[in-house]
Amino acid sequence: MNLFENMTLAFQNLKANPLRSSLILIGMAVGIGAVLHVVVLGEMTQKNIKERLEKLGSNVLSISPGFSWRHGQRSSTKTVNLTWDEANDLMTQSNVITGTVPLYSGGGDVAFLDKTWSTQVTGTTPNYKVINNDHLIEGRFFNQGELDQRARVCVLGATVYEKLFKNGSPIGKTIMIKSKPFQVIGLLEAKGESWSNPDDQVFIPLTTAQGRIFGVDHLSGILAQMRTAQDYNEALFDIESTLRRNHRLTDELANDFRVRRQDFFLATIQETNKELAQFIIVIALVSLVVGGIGIANVMLISVTERIREIGIRRAIGAKKIHILIQFITESMILGFLGGLFGITGGLIFNHFYIGEDLSLPLQWISYSFLICAGIGIVAGIYPAFKAANRNVIESLRYE
Image (cartoon, rainbow, N blue to C red; front, side, top):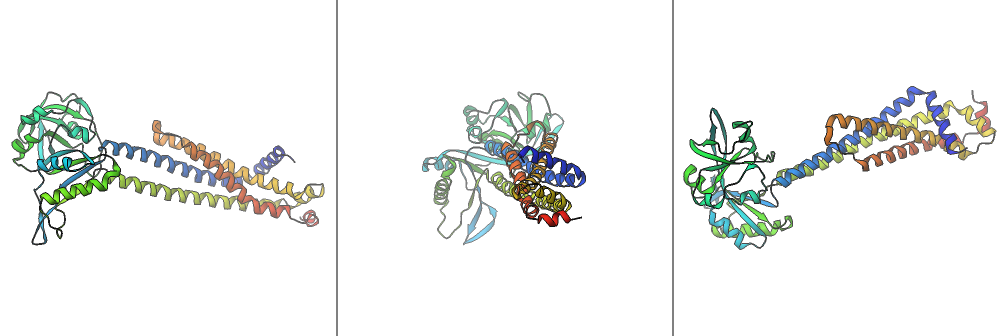
């Protein structure tokens, strides 16, 4: 008996028990559909996180004040010891830090006409846009001349723009920052939330922030860009060495500053997402194994129901290998059809659930067919051997 005849006979036997076959197919289809859905969601999440990581700035470390120490004890207040000179020192003292940006941030109300919003006012330098990988939708960032002149110009983050303007161009408009007029010269592209909301900020020249708004001469933070991500340990060593020396910290005292990677939060989410996706895929694969057990059960029942048929076939010349191939073929077809329905249903569901951003996981589609066919074969081996090894005389006498 050739393969085509085996497949024809297999479909006839499956059609003879439509309800039983349908239940097995549904079980397999749900398992494969769940695997594909998890894979698609995982790939999309990884893609989105990767884009967010790129937007946060390339290989950037964030340095912020820690706590001061008195007589070997940590105080309850943060230090105010980061300075503009230290930002310059970090770049000159390290071979792996390619650029630094001093920052001073503080809370404040911004207003335009009758709208008011409480946000973060950040003073910085023109190099901030480059190191922090910011992109302007409209207008420009402030320049060195405006920094030197303590100019009252500002660049809006996406959240502040939405709260004050909603639509229309903000360029050239005058807003009030802590009751002082500032001209809007730029609008930044949205980045999305990480461990904070980088879009909920207004950026002004650092000299303006220190001298006109907050009245301070220290910094609230420094951004340091590394040459590559692999230089993290060396960059961290250089930062600690420079700042500890400047702050005159002895060996027994801990750092009075903190160093954090800007992408740490999203990178952690990325790793967690990978582990969670793998865990869910394992659960979905377990459901496929359960479906395989169902196929084995169906095939065992089929063997019992067709004992007389098996005896007749053996009596007219069919060999054990023919019976074996026939039942394995039926089992494989059940698994293959379950995979086909699961893949089709999974892709249709993902198309309506995700939309145009759907990317076909071709690799996993191929894996799904192989997994289902493999489960079908494995599930059919024992029933097939049982059918092939039945005694011919006893099979013919079976009622």
